[in-house]
Image (cartoon, rainbow, N blue to C red):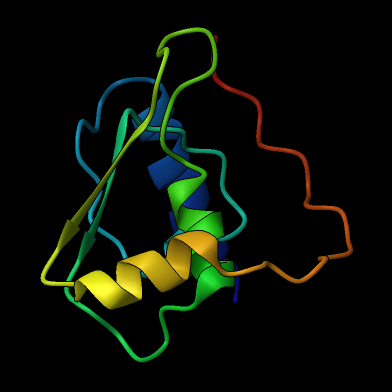
Length: 105
């Protein structure tokens, strides 16, 4: 959907330029964008939270060239599920994501 893609691009650009300090999103926003952050927070458990989504969203933590470490925080996610998400094998994914939009000068 065009509006959704325009919205994602706007959020990504504003975040990368420093105009947005916090972005709260569902897993939908986490796919197909380039928004590395120092900290990623998983708030509440969800049936749809699996190892692929965990890897995709937690992979946003830590900004290349800025942070030595990225941080992942869990709120209200059972300990057994956290462990399962961290150690679960991730299936091999194929495909090439589109390049990120250019930043304004």
